[in-house]
Length: 330
Image 1 (cartoon, rainbow, N blue to C red):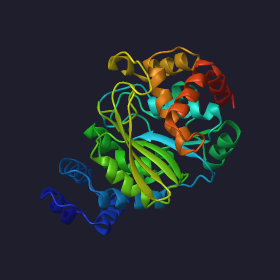
Image 2 (cartoon, helix red, strand yellow):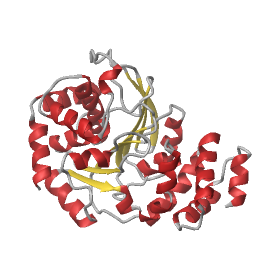
Image 3 (cartoon, rainbow, N blue to C red):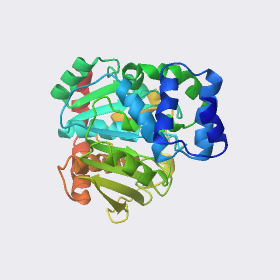
Image 4 (spheres, rainbow, N blue to C red):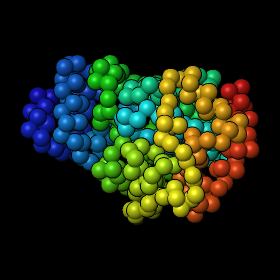
């Protein structure tokens, strides 16, 4: 490990093979807490490279439990944007499930924010501790299953306490969204830094992805923003292209960023319930924008404006709240 730490301290990128070896050491519990801390913080200070991310994804995917489902999508962000927003991608996943899109959601509890996807789903009374067969049944029955990362990536237990101690985003925020135990081939991924768009694009291109959107907004969200333009890297059939989503073109008319600020799990869960019952506000619009991306990558819509109209009509009807109740009672 010392060789890799020295290289990182000199601001040198690790090769794919070096990254794999380093992550094997981490994931096998062979690194000390101090070494884990140094490895993650040095990577962050240098800036994570595509080979380093790819090496981590390779190791994490190989060590995870498997969920065997077809034609699912995942909607998740890297987190780490420092904005402490409401759980937009989690709410958009539930909205998509209520529309009929199969969702294999992969996530965790809070690491770099006040409330992670696991926290808010638990507060919504959705079981986050299901085994693979139960997840498969949930998805087939209700179009939604949540794979709680610590249960599916047991090797992560070795780095969890140090990540919590660091308290801000690390390379695991980038590896996690690419390491779904369901090996999804359609994905909406939010990244916290515009510079990561192409790095993630190249990573996903090599992971047998059919259709993915990688998004980062000009106001710094790892989501599609209702307030500012969002830059999108699209991967479809191994072709990479660039798209810009402008809320002005869609006549979003959102009010102010403060309306998206979250708090603890109870606060965030109540905000989700409100919009699922049909309350119209900035949070609802943000959720619909991100769910619209899910309709694009699942190829239910080809035009973003049509996808957005569909998600808006559905969420305002209150049908999403009824579907949420069926998931909870299932």
